[in-house]
Length: 354
Image 1 (cartoon, one colour):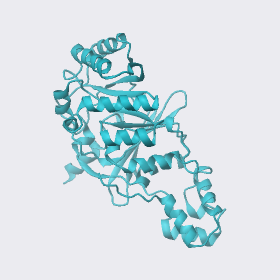
Image 2 (cartoon, one colour; image 1 turned 90 degrees about the horizontal axis):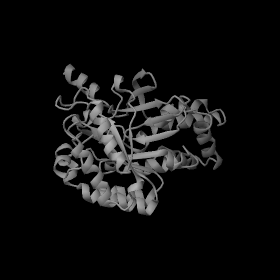
Image 3 (cartoon, one colour; image 1 turned 135 degrees about the vertical axis):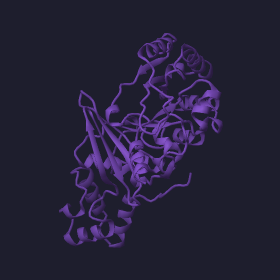
Image 4 (cartoon, one colour; image 1 turned 60 degrees about the vertical axis):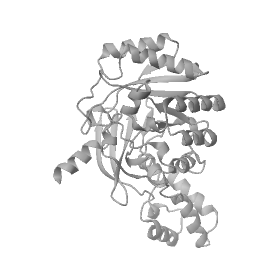
């Protein structure tokens, strides 16, 4: 997919400062104001001369942020923010607060999603567009400027991260020591299996965590649930993931949403085990995350959450085979901030007004 914008605002800032013949240390003063002092407003960066502050505000606007909060919804341990971009498209980002104090953030790579996974509310609204580098990283900057600690980041919000090539420039910004300075091991990218860009991830960001959204071990069923499987078949994706493990020595996570009566049988569990054991020489470096389904506005009524007995039976089969497996904790379901729910209710409200 074509990139929206390769030039980041931080690069534009450097170019702008050079055009004004400002000394080289000015850029460092600005980035320290943002990332050390959590100050995103140019006029409040008093370390800079007043005339420069005014020039920056005129060129870039009063704030370093390019996204504006529209609605913020909060429940215990979770808050979800709907953010508006300059062209009025919107995305959602989610903050999760763990009891130990750890803060994790789930951010979006696209407004909507064009892959059409049949059980996903976000996918039901279609793809509006991919996000620019700044729009991706500004979701995190929004929270950071409000005083939050960016302990871990996951690209599991709206959209397919590896269908937006701007993801790679965004990762460069997030890991840049002068900017966000995040360790790659604190970042997770989730994908349905875009093979060329998984390979690009392996080459360029070998230490970033990779999650593969599987949801069925059977080729035909996965194609029905996730049409992308026809373009990038499951067996080919697993070959590439195995190559990723061999080259990086890093664990790959497998996300598996449990759909009642669809993919939650013991036959599915057995097939999942067989798939991992037969396709991989690195079984110990795969980790299966079982996820309770989160129905919401915009998702078909035929999909429901599996019962706990089936979930536990599935879990035991995978665990008994010696494969690492966990049942992911549910966060944010009460405010439609859980997996597959983002943005769907806002689209439904917009449709109702028309």
